[in-house]
Length: 128
Image 1 (tube, rainbow, N blue to C red):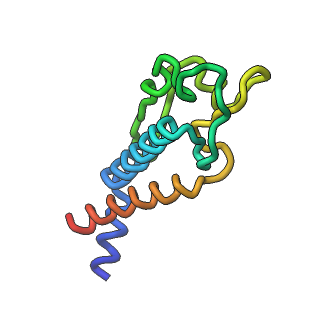
Image 2 (spheres, rainbow, N blue to C red):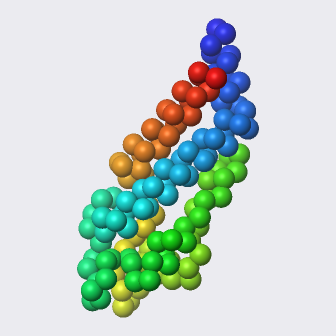
């Protein structure tokens, strides 16, 4: 009973939810980095090739380098500062979609990484 109470109190604490938001947000940023490095979308499908010789989604490196994470006690918000990130995410009539963030359902890899982040945070609270 004491352990259940300790876990319940931890789960309801702002400290726990903020650490969890940060852990999941950082996991998402790492997954985005992997997508850029492997030229795959969140569902691990290859991105459409480009007409340019540079790596897919990388021209100047601005898109890749401007992802930011805002952590709140109950959320993690990932943003990209470029005005054209949405064009890659959705595609246009002149450019194929090169998705960066999941858009329909949780990808297996993202689910795995988020669960790992949760496990780490729960272990920290269990040990602390």
